[in-house]
Amino acid sequence: MGILLLTSASGAPGVTTLGVGLALTWPRPVLLADCDPGAHQAVLAGYLAGTSAEGKGLLRVAEAHRDRRSLTEVVIDQSVPLVEDQAVSRLFLPGFGRPSSAALFGGVWPDLTDVFVALDDHGFDVIVDAGRISHSGLPSPLVERASLTAVVLRSSLRSVVSARVHLLALREHPRLQAHQRGLGLIVVGAGQPYTAREIGKSLGAPVVAEIAHDPAMAKHLSDGEPQSRKFDSSRLVRSLHAAAGQLATRVDRADQLVRG
Image (tube, rainbow, N blue to C red; front, top):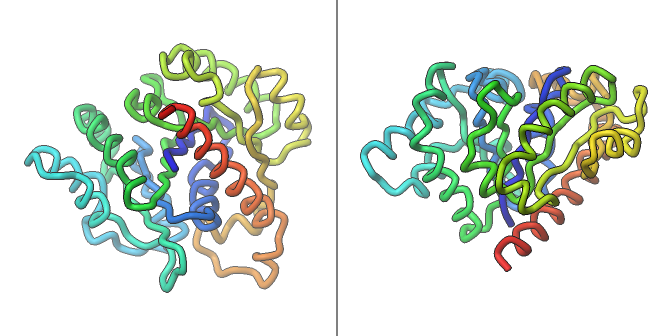
């Protein structure tokens, strides 16, 4: 068990939509953490259809950190369920309420990342939605402790070229220099026009999962639209189930390798 860090370069590949989809199909208890510095509140306004978080989220985590309180219980308390009446626990930690909040969160990241790692003791994996890679990069503690950092991209030339630029910067991180298997690609809509194999070869990184490009079905995950009767059997959901299984196994193996 460990941390899956999701990010993207450009080309609107739908990192948040993917994060929700993976959290809903993950084979083990999971916490989806919104760590996007853009403070878009995309899950609350999208999949959760305007559900109020009642003030819960990273702001309260920062307040607890300032007060030197134990963050493990705070993170669980500040999370909301992604699904009611669930057989497997699927929690969501809301993100920043303001874009400026991320700039003030620097001192919190190390301790929050420690909590994400410690959630293993509570039986949880953690999926982190880090949004697009900004000019300042990703929070270093998250990259340092993530079992897998996955760059999400589409198969268009624009998306591939943008990913190449940002992969150069990611590869400079000491964690990813020491553990090259800690970096991978998730391709959305392979074959439009480039195949996953072509993309992986071009970027020099393994494609760890492929997700079907199915905008109509994805609206349930991105905007909270009612499920189509065909949703559960759709190409999108089938690809999410396959990807969740593959990524959970990869995260587990990477976590064991780092600990060993």
